[in-house]
Amino acid sequence: MSAEKPQRSAGTRTAIRPASDFGIELHPGVEDLLNDSTALAKAYGGASLKDIFATKLVTTCVLTACTGGLLFGFDQGLLSIILVMPKFLGDFPAIDEASSSAASFNKGLMTAMLELGAFLGAILVGFVADKYSRKVSIGVGLAWFAVGSTIQTASFSVAQLIVGRTLGGIGIGMLSCTAPIYVSEVAPPKVRGAFLVMEQFMIVFGIVLMFYITYGTRLIDSAWCYRLPFLLQMVPGFFLGAALFILPFSPRWLASKGRDQECLDTLVRLRNLPATDPRIQAEWLTIRVEAIHNHEALIERHPTLIGSGMKTELKLEAASWVDMFKPAVIRRTMIGIMLMFFQQFVGINALIYYSPTLFETLGLDSALQLHMSGVMNVLQLVAVIAVFFYFDRIGRRPLLLLGSIGMCVAHTVVATMIGLYFKDWASHSGQAWCGVSFILVYMLAFGLSWGPVPWTMPAEVHASSYRAKGVALSTCSNWLCNFVIGLITPPMIKNIGYGTFIFFAVFSFLSGVWAWFMPLRQSEGRTLEQMDQGFHSHAAAHDQEMKEQITRVVLGQTPAQTESPIPNASNEKVADVFIERQETYRLEKDYGKEGHIEYTLFWWGQ
Image (cartoon, rainbow, N blue to C red):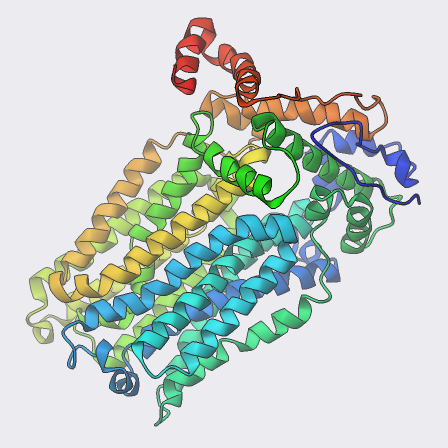
């Protein structure tokens, strides 16, 4: 095969190399697979358990990346019991209600700082994962997590715990954002969804596993009752760090850097098929087309910001984030942000972090508080497993609506039981267990709806050139809202009691109202072009037109252009004119010429 040359520069297509330049003789069936993504997905096999684990390297990649989800779950699962351990409260009196009037705030701050750190980590992923690779991003996240966990294990003050959780949170944020990206980019098309569900499964499994580890260590008669769980959460990180050395780079990241030969070689390893196989060739060419298109789409939006140097890269990165909030894209962006907002404000992590305290308000003794907290976490695990089998059959919006109804009813019943009977639980044990039962109902309703859907739809609704930023923004929304909930829940439980459940019931109701009026009614079973119909947009159709042109070039059917497909604008005004022309073409199709003129004046602030 010929030596690889640098691929793209300044948006020109003259540097695009046809497959023949790599010494590849294309199989006769490649073009059919290239033009039919459904046929390509089916060509790799079905989605049975045997198909999912058919390739050892892919399985290793997925399990390794999902270890990041396990670490995420560990950190969520260990606090609920540690926060009620007598030894822990004795060593950290600032968190003990009996010793400090500010204990509720300190407890919330210590819990919430992990989420704030994770928010910062998710922002870092957008730059690190694109520039240095998904593997490096996972490694950097693991390093932050190890530092934070070490500080937590060795802490002797609340301030140290807060610092440790913040630094560890940065790692959790990077791992939680990078792992799904890496998994989706190495998995075969037909089983990609199953592997992404595995990431969700590992998170919940980590919560359950660490909960029962701390359930056992609480019996240790020393500080190791809480230091040991902090220490043990680092153990999977050692395996993750070691495995990173043998994992391949993401083939899509390699293509984005113009390393097309390495991309092909990696696909050959991942699929365990020869380079002559039509499936390998079609997937390789599809990945190349996508990478070239994303590069050109960025140039199209910002022709004056393309160049070398860190300053230019930072300007382009900032401009790309701003793009997500422009009129043509903002409705799609807000779907991801609002899904994650409601996912947290319906109260899921309040129950996970503070479940013993919440069960205490229902009159349960200390042993039952811990026991029912474990049952609650196991039920969420069961729901995540169940959702795998029907997720694409029912649809996203119906699931959200049913989940909102179930959560609202559950919160309302629990609030009613506490409000009416909290002064005399001994005489109303039936009502107490009614409240406990509806907390369990809530966990099932959440696990079957608002748990998985917000992690799925952000990637579905965006056109390809916006998808990475859209997913990152939704993840940032998740962690920021998670931070707020972790901070406010302890004071709410202390000061308003049953009002805490009313608060979450109101947001559960509002989540259903939002889901009913959600801009996109259906995403399952749609192509990107069909998705545009729900938004009255031609963004994805325009993307598809560009991809078809690039496909002809990589197949060698059309000579590469001698000039850039994007005008080389000499100043910002010319760039604006070019982009406005592109918007004119799209918007006139949607709104007619008169509607476009009014819209364009709004767009450019004339």
